[in-house]
Image (cartoon, rainbow, N blue to C red; front, side, top):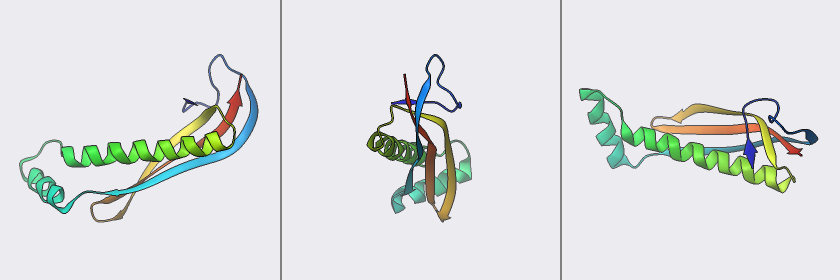
Amino acid sequence: MIIVTTNTVPGKEIKDLKGLVKGNCVQSKHIGKDILAGLRTIVGGEINEYTEMMKEARQKAIGRMVEEAKERGANAIVAMRLETSAIMQNTCEIIAYGTAVHVE
């Protein structure tokens, strides 16, 4: 699956639009890791537990978007975007979306 943030795929021609595709993931961390992350805010620096949480959520959201595109017969996704929001404390939602297309 070709995934680009641009409206076209360089060197390819869009033959068919398959429509909007999306995938999302709501992710939270284990309470023990939340406590460790809270302690890290005292000393400063990167909070690896949350970095990993966001990475996992992005991968799941993109994977779900790709599956929806495959179900529609697409071989590429153009204009792909990621958005995030907080659902509740220490929980995030990642949404991946774009336009599924068939390119040649």
